[in-house]
Image (tube, rainbow, N blue to C red; front, side, top):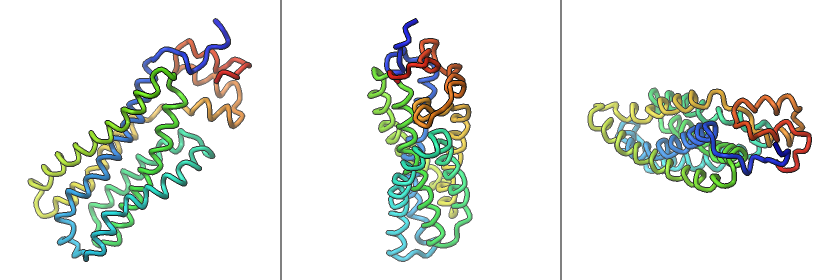
Length: 234
């Protein structure tokens, strides 16, 4: 086998498909969590006695969080690795979504929604980095585009499921609607278990041959380049 075989040219395999699901699941959750607040706000405002100011702040809180999450998430992804940051988003989704069930004030809800926005901001750089660094170039564009479609799928699910919860959940339905993201976040956390670190990041950080070679079990046999001394084609 030629030592010049690179990740750019290998066939699409099962690992690539699972990785697309893992990263695409993050986009689905992003669309869901950012849209569900619009459904719940009809009950949130009277329940918490929100002023117009706090209604606006809560509506914008996740977007503010995305700004900070995207900025620091990109830096941390490069510094700490893709795999670690891959689980930060789902963890924040779970913790903050569950916490919303017991929220009693506008400022608390703002903080929780802000942290959820931070999680969304972190998701963007880490999910795309994984796909770009693992996928062969032939399939990279379509599968990155699929992330956008999954975002809208998550948003549509939020409106459908949110309306159902609001119609049948009673006076406290908004709490159920906001905390429902925890279920999707938990599923996302589970499907991401077993994801290896990006070989490109390992090489960039001086990862040893044994650490890089250990990734072979996730990839097709054509990824002999992982243990090849000449890695110029990576």
